[in-house]
Length: 59
Image (cartoon, rainbow, N blue to C red; front, top):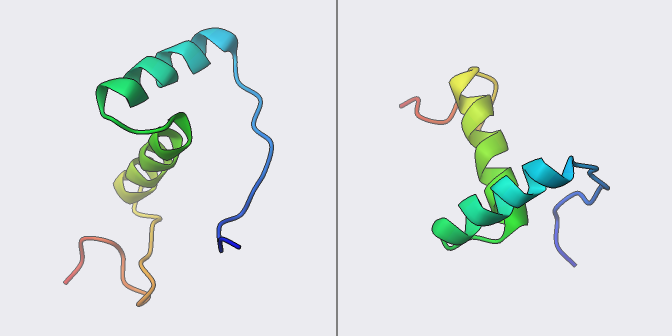
């Protein structure tokens, strides 16, 4: 079993259509696209920390 957390996400159908197209353009599943976008936003906000405790991108 995967170590990833599962949860239900309700989205506006128009937003889902945008995400579906965007994911297809980047050869990802919608789920992977949403995860990519959330991680990108967390990095940009300075909130994403790697497994070693350092923020992603820090040396």
